[in-house]
Length: 213
View (cartoon, rainbow, N blue to C red):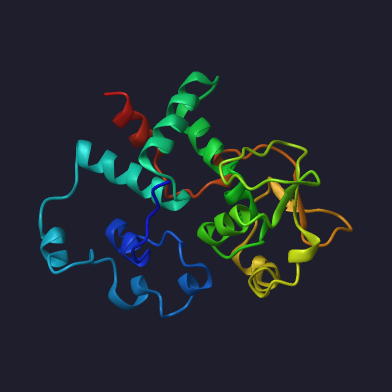
């Protein structure tokens, strides 16, 4: 399967905003956005900012690219999520964000078991995560209300997992997934994620307009 293998900090600079792709580094002064600002990467970065402000298609495309990069999904996957969201009842844009939030790798990140979605995906791929007591190694697996997401007992001493779990409070947790009572490194999906649980800087309507052309 195709994977992005280049420096992820370039993606944040290209979108002109922090996408929190590098875990705790994104909260430190060493973050390239803090050091270099929102100038796009590359030798032509300055000239890209001198042009006219993005409008219409360009604005819609950049918003789609930003959300793709936040959740670290490929173009084909993203379009499939949109088409599924469009078939669901309710508002298409909000359905799309809910489907992306319900990905298992995102749930692992949001629960506090990883400092970034990339790290969470690696944990899932390597078989460190269980859902309702069964190992699930598919990052795109959709969690549902009532599910319990747990780090396997043998993996709980992993330094990366321990560090992420201890600092999870500083990154914040959404209301839809909370630590399970009396269980170590376990979180329960209490409800499906809604729009208020997702980054408010995302303008999902621009994505809907882009795909509706």
